[in-house]
Length: 293
Image (cartoon, rainbow, N blue to C red; front, top):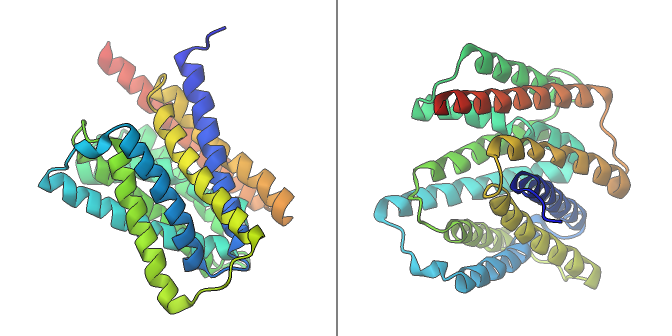
């Protein structure tokens, strides 16, 4: 029995969030024994090969970005490099679910940044939802308490870099293939990893560690492909909320693999952030329908 486009998009988004979180789990595990930049370099090689093969199969290499698009791809790649470093440095020292809870603020911050940078209109309802969501983030990181540390700030900084990364593609030409954009970022992150190994050093890789790096690279590619496919099926307003399933995966994998379980304040803050994000997505969908009518 064929499934609807909306259901296909929802399932693909759930698969994407699962793949990205499994990638994070592999990275957190393998960086306990291998240097961070060595791990980034090895995983990056897998991602570059995979995305390069995708570009060849789809003939995406035939497209040449214009000068303006080239600068935007460079900005996106640099933001991705910074986001990767900050996120993985925080992931090394924070429970997976706690960091994932902070990342749930991303849709809210993208909405706010789009209003500040591009002049998108935000009504008082969505602005209130954004402020409530930010209060939820403060509950998660709890500044001034024993549960707060500088690694939480690194997590927030990585979210800010992801906002820059995602908004930078908004002005790209529509015909530019996503594989070209993703490949540029993958090359930049991989190059950063190899440069970092010159300062951090290189350790021999055991078969178990090699398997974890391979798993991280493969799931990273799967996450990218399914996220792109998800946004091309069904109503975005219905598909996008399933991004929040990443927190469920992070809680389960954090408990099973690392024995970590967030405290009640993290759950409360995450619930507030997700609730605010869902309201914002619902409001945007309603406004789009009103405009279309």
